[in-house]
Length: 290
Image (cartoon, rainbow, N blue to C red):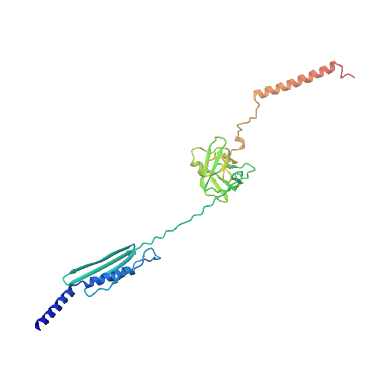
């Protein structure tokens, strides 16, 4: 009888030691982690990144589990470590999902159909009057105002150019000027001449308004601004005042030259000879007798 109780006691003691050393917590955590992974589903967030932290409950022997969601799904299985009678189980699952929103910008482009037979664009001069030639003093301001005609394509910028008829020079009055419905440009000839190596002459000039992306000699195109028509104007230098009694005309003189005097004498002599000859002829023929 005593032997039976001793056997039962040893059996209980043996199974007690075996039960205390068995990794029950790791098994529970592993089962819980499996259920957690099975329950985790991918979700789409409205923001660029969503983060959720969850911690599983720890068992009596100290088990922990954490899960972080940041983008791409990455799962790490639980790791179980057991030493003697202490069992530590750690389960970590990380799910990283990155949602990238791609914005597509659609740019609408418009095209203009221009009749090949249409007229080329140009300008209509308002100031000065295109029907007459206006003269500006060198050293003073000159104002030019114009409208655009037959223009289907507006240039990004324009250049205002003047060409001198005497020295065949081309002067760029302004460049990359903003295009307005009515163009206006005030030319300060004093400042302009101070910055030039070639002086402005007393002469006639031709004003051109040119597309900044083209040259003065480009072929005119329908609907595009061209410079095939220019508007004339004059420039002159004012002379200082000279009293009348000191004025001398460079192209005139109060006295006749020798050639002029000889010409007058010849004309008078021929007239006298003609009169006398005619009178003698008539008198000799008796045409004047009664």
